[in-house]
Length: 581
Image (cartoon, rainbow, N blue to C red; front, side):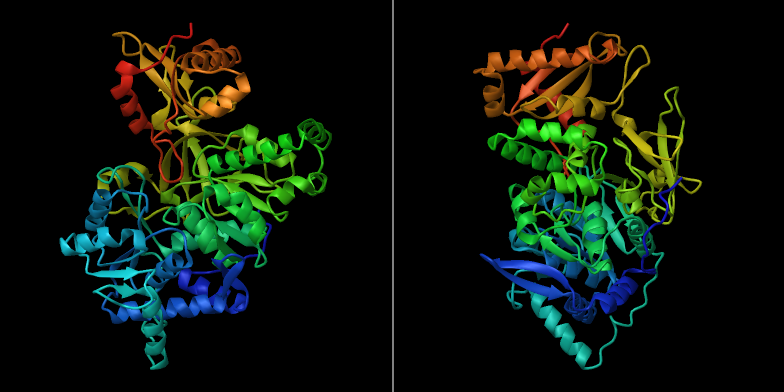
């Protein structure tokens, strides 16, 4: 059962068609607002964006890159987005790369993807020059997003745009008239994981465009909206829901100055829409809470939340206007994705009239499978499937939980060059997500956790680490946590629950009026014991490890479970885990 279509949306066949139609409709609207100094901005309108894409694409074909694979790497910026679209809308196949990977892993991906050119920002220049000089893969051309002019064998993106515009004036229509095969691989995305284990997801224009139309049909977003770009652009969640969707709707995109600047940027640019990960919404919530406490208004706000609990979002917004003003006063939609959102945080936002909804998807699904909306919303749910996607659960247990499988035009073509993995994931037209879920009678989907991270106890009970981590993270002073099963005897089924907790020393000391490692351990251990009392006995956490070092995570803040487990095993000899019997 899907979310019913409510919004009018523009029908598109591919990204080139999207640029043409939305460019015509929103030509004079601002596409990018770029900060060039204190209080100074440069505005680029949608017409200029399309002209830059045409110019750059024409220049790339002129360089002999027609049909080739071209990568993009760098921080979020308009040059990254222009490069992506100039590749995918008539030149060749785009390969977005993770900017946080170390040099050796990036070189491995350059080799595996067989790219011939790469757009990059300054930070990667030395590494890429060495890769080119060493003859890594097929890499021939380096294209800088920062240079104004070509030099030292390196092309400048800005100069290529002008070169291409000149070629168009002279009658070169190769890029402009290029035909797009909507169903062929045009995007190569690496899944997160070590480079040897990462799979290459092959996506087509049809995959992405079906998803854009689905999102547009259910979310109230228009050309007057302002999107804050924060999540890494190589990640399909930001790429589809942030970057491509904003251009499709003729909206304005602004770029974040960094995690700690999010609330300030939201005020500065009057941001209305943001797609981000749970960790960011938790940080924003903590910032808001701190402000309220400073003003001595916490009690008053908590009472008001109860008073307005059953009011409309509009009424709540008026009642809590001062809190909305901390985020610029214009927030219309906050989308949380890429990891599980604590329903406690979700509820708090909505009590304040901040429209925070959960979305869900994977790289393999372009990505959106389901999303909550203002009308279709249940606390803790990822909403209902988007209109063209079907979902069901298979191998269901007594609690109604099974593996979520999905079908629709947004499902990837294959894992490129990996027939065995493709066969495992795609069965009879259904994609097996690897996530465990339940679907209620109204069609709302509730994600329970990753199939491979479930801890199975001796009594056959299933423990979902993500669910328990959300509860632990509510403890004041705990920044993040990692729940894992530990074998307690030679019996491999004798598993007990342990947790590694990352704490903030200053907050713990101030909140609980304690000092020193031993006292900190005792106070947090007491909090875990209190938590244990609220859960069935089999779920009780039997031991904890305390640290101030962040957990190992992906660029979108997902916990890398295997890596963290390996790290714990290495440190086991010195671990501070103690029994909680």
